[in-house]
Every structure is written in C-alpha cells, then in structure tokens.
Amino acid sequence: MSLLDGGFRPGGTSRNRPHGHLGVLKIAVIALFAILTLRLVDMQIVDGEGYRQRSVNNHIAQTNILPPRGLMVDRNGVPLVENVPVYSVQVIPDLLPEGEATRYAIYLALARPEMTEVPALQIQEMVRAAIEDGRGDQPLTIRKYLSKDQALTIEEASVDMPGVSLAIEPGRRYIGGEAFSHIVGYIGDMTPEDWEQLQDEGYLLNEPIGISGLEARYESDLRGTVGVSANEQDAHGALIEILETKDAEPGSTLKLAIDANLQNFVAELLQDSLIDATGDAKVAAAVVMDVNTGELLSMVTIPTYDNNIFVNPSDENTAAIERLNNDSRKPFLNWAINPAAPGSTFKLVTASAALQEGIITPETGQFAPKVLSVKGENDELYPLVDWKDHGYINLYDGIAWSSNIYMFRSSCGILGETRGLSNKSGATYDDAVILGNYAREFGFDELTGIDIGGENPGLIPSPEWKKRAIGEDWFYADTCFMGIGQGDVLATPLQIARMTAAVANGGTLVTPHIVNEILSPSGSLVHRIETSTKKVDVDPEHLAVVREGMHRSVIYGAGLRAGVPGLDIAGKTGTAEFKDYDAGGITRQHAWFTGYYPFDNPQIVVTVYFDLGVGGDKAAPAAAKIFDYYAENIAP
Image (cartoon, rainbow, N blue to C red; front, side):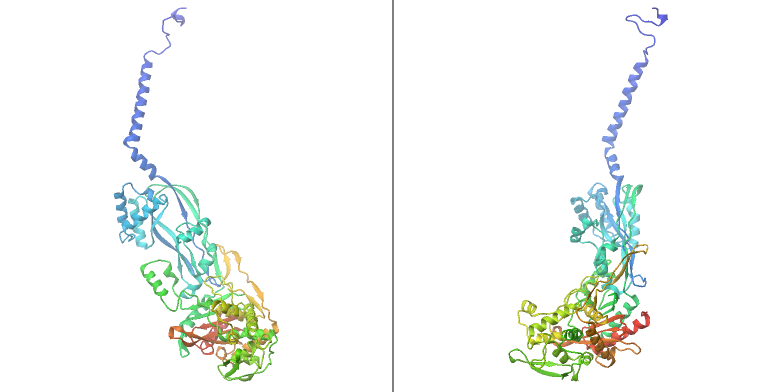
C-alpha cells in the first residue's frame, strides 16, 4: 500500500494525526487549571472573609406577624377599644457586624434620646444573654412603645446599622372611658411564667396577652392567628425576595350586653353621690341586669382607673399605677363582684324561706317594737334591736318597712313565743342550716358564673364554718343576725342582683354575663352566649308574696325614695352595720337598695351599694335615677 493510498508503514506517521496542535492543547488545559486554581485561592484565602460575610448578610428571615386583636363594642355597636401601632426597635444578634467595638458603636447610637434611651451597656448585656440562650438568630426587642419621632429616626438610621430594624406591632387603646376599665381590663407583655404555660399553644415570646377583665377572659377569641413572612434580606433588613407569606388573621369581636350610655350615666351618678348629706362614702357599685336573661346592661364600680396606663409602661404611667396601688379605696378591685354585709336586702331570702317552710303566712301578724329582749341559751338575755317601732304588722309590712324584729321571729324565732325555721323551739343549729340552704338556693356562697375574673363568692356562715374558721361555737344570736343579713354574712352587689332577679321572675336563677355575642372580623355571628339557669326551690306563690312586700316598700315603706312618678317599681332597702377599724372601730353602715321594674312585667333589676350611708336615704335615690334613665332611654 502506497502513501498515496492513505496507508501507513511500521514506524511511520499517519498523515491524518495532528502533530503540532496537540502541544498547544496541552498548554491551554494547563493554563486554564492554573487560572481556576488562582481564582479559588483568591476567593478562599484572599477574599474568603468577605464572601463568608456576604453569605451571612444575605439570609432567609422568617418573621412572625402578630394579628390585630379582636375589638369590643357595646350592645349598640359603640366601639370600646381600638387597635393602634406599637413601635419597637429590634436587633438580630447574629446579623450584627463582627467586632465588639463596631457593635458597641451601634449600641451607643441606639442609646441616644432620639432613638431608645436604653443604656448601651444594657443593650450589650441583652445581646450577650440572647446569644448565650441560643436565640442569636431571633429578633430581640430592645425597647417597645417608641414615639413616632423615635420610630422615624430608627427607620432612617437602621440603613447604616446591620442587624437593627424597626418593628411595628398591633397595640391597644381603650376609648370607652374609665367607666369600662374593670369590665374591659387590659393587655400586657407576657411574663416568663406566662410563656411557660402558653408556648405550647403557639404563643410567641413577645406576644401581648390579656391580663384582666374581658381581655383575659376571652383571650382565645380576641387573640387571632399569627401570620408568617419568609423573605430573603440583606444585612440591613432590606427585602431581596419574598419567599412565602401567610397573613395574620384578626381576632373575633366581642359584642357586649352593656349599654355604653347607661354605663357612663351610672358611673357619673355614683361618683356624684359619694359625698352628700347622708354620708361620705368612699366606694360604690351598681348592677343593672336583665331579669330573664342575665344580660348585664351596666356594671359599675367606683373608684375606677384609666386602663390606658397599662398600655405603655412609661415613668408617668408607672407612677400612676403605684399611686393607685397605695390608694386605701382599692381602685383596682371591682366592688360589684366583691362582698360586704348585705343587711336587709337579705330579708328577701329569709321571708322566702319562712313562707316555704310554713313558719308564717302573708297575714301572720307579729309585734315588732324597736327593742325586744329575749332569752337565749343558758337564759342569757339578748336585746334584739329594730330601726323603729313598727307595732303589730304582717309579712307584707315586715318587708315594706324592713322590720328586724319580724325577720328575727321568722328565722331564729323568739324563745318561748315563736319557733324558728326548723319549727322547733330553740333549734339554733337547725334554723341556721335551713336558712343557709335557702341562701344557697338563691346563689349566695358561690360564684355567679359571670364571664370576668376577680369574683369573690362571699360567705353564708354555718355552725361548722364558725368552729373551723373562728374556733367558736354557734349561738342563738348568730342565727338571728344571719336572718337580717348581718353577722358574718357577706354578699356581692352582683349576687344581690341575681337573687332579686330570681324573686322578680318567679324563681329562675340566671347566670349573669357581660358578653352577648362573639363575631367574626367581618361581623358574622360566631357564637351567641346562652343564659344558663336553675330553679329556686321556693314555690311561685311565695315569691309573689315577697314581690308584693317589695312593691309596698317603694309605694309607702322604707324604699319610698326609690320611687319615680309614672313608674311601677318594687324594691328593698338595706342598711348593714359594720365595724370601721380604719376609723377606730366605730360602728358604721353600708347602704343598699335592690329592686326591679316594671312590677307586673319585670324587665330589669337595679342593685346599688355604697360603703357608707343608709339604704333608704342614699342607695334608693340613686336607684330611682337609674330606673328613670332606663325607662326614658332604653326600655322597649
């Protein structure tokens, strides 16, 4: 085969094989690898720190979005709270620049008055603690409740402060006024103890929660659902790319049974009535409740406070809270659900019990002088005292004129003359137990079930309780004084209102409630609060007798000043003696009135309490004004 034929010979070179180009290719490959090697050395060694910082600076940030808290409105849709922005400055420790000196310069900048006024050393310690706790990648709130000017300054300055950002969260403003503070309550920052309990329910560490009032009771309804935003950001927090967003869902709206105008009217009335010719009271409370449903149209306690002081823990607000804590009137205590001796309002229970047990009839006549001395155990003489000489009266007038002697005869009995509730002469223990049982039938000595915290169950004493709590035996006088709502008997204005409603409606004990409906953010019904009830073990015809006695009280008896021309009102006064140890242990009196309107078709109960005064002179006139307001402005 010749070379022309394209053949080859041993030891020869093929004419199609590259000769000089192979060397060039080898040189090119070697050069390319050399360039890549030099570039890797440059990236990893020369510029390695820069690229590492860049990988940190451009990061994925997941932000939890707090939802707007649910609103509250009165029964007519009047808003009582509103949501407002709360500005805070946050630091993500892991995104702060390297070097403690550089970081401290940021802390010093944040410490300036136009930013946070938080000392730089304090910020440094907060960052250090967060890193040690493994929270370096989480936002750390340096200061909350910034002013708008501070927020704007931080927003502008954060561009030059890596790891620092302005956060805007939903806050609260209470616009209903001080008359609503005990009802609405307030929100506050979560404590470490709160966090331990709530973290399993999905709560965030810095999430505000309800502390008192409806804010606390309906926390799960008001809270809403937390949203999430996952974004790629640079070191300054600037958005590079949105990766995922789940909007926060607002909480539900509470529609209250309370009438805002009535609430404010009652609050102003009680405040104006504290000091007058009938006595200088320090504390007052009133309840206006629907007789049949338990809806609370008004529940007022005086003194009150501005719950907005808890929204922003400024120095001024902290000082205000301290003053209120030191106030002897205890402004943070809701006096409508805290007890005092109920006095003669309790006689409605005593009369009902005596009728049901057959001890008396409506026409049972008894002699009721101002003072009656009787013998008790061991022939010990007890002076039983009335507020006036009533003469010979029946049960109707015993209620109308609030006779102590008549109710003594109907509960503990007069030894040697009449028998007590047990229908056995001298049955001190049995009489007390029977009366106590009837009191509990009417809802005393237990919580009413109102949808708000802070309620006290009061006390219905018993021989066993006295022995256990005081270490003393039960005496004849204990039963007698229990029959007129004194001694160790304690009841709240709300319990008195609930008992009165049961008398008025024929024997149904209703559960009071402040909230009527829970609505979605769009206004649709989520849940309606239904009234729970139970029947009182007293025959309706006996309750009708008690109602007639209350009716006569307002027409011509001790409750005369509760009357309003043109309104048919029934009611019962109460004046309870107590030892005022703050005034040297002298005997003073609580003033009560409880009643309902209209007499023949009950709609509402009004119960009024003053810590000082006479029931017929101080509480009854205040109740009259409330009845009048209701009839003029609310009644159907």
